[in-house]
Image (cartoon, rainbow, N blue to C red; front, side, top):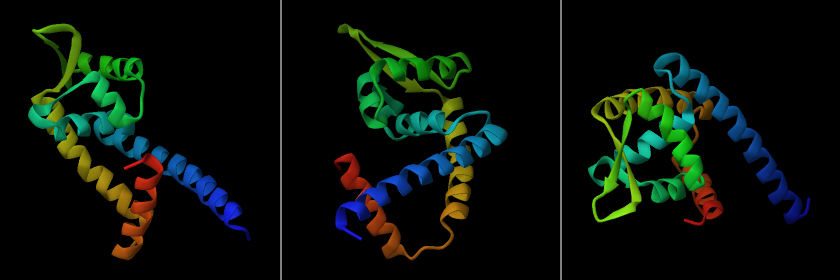
Length: 143
């Protein structure tokens, strides 16, 4: 099998694996915490950010979404009190997303579910396998 075919096959399997894992995570998070995996990722980025806040454009970049996509994703989370908006007093064009204490608590609890689903999905690969695969994924996203 040629290298091109191997890399294509890897990407196809990666796509299918992502779809499978995403469905499992959505199901588990939805039934335990009432959020999707996309919601979890957004909340986790905010939780990890200094002061629990990020500019919406920075959040979009970190999640691989458009700014309008992030705005649409934030709306339901705002309605249920997990995030709030904050404007920049010096520049009205700049908007921040800020995780609330309820959002912070939810993402901390939801991380246990994500960890469990991830562990069950991967089984027990060796640390060097995970590191090598993680390196390939980092290369794909340019980091």
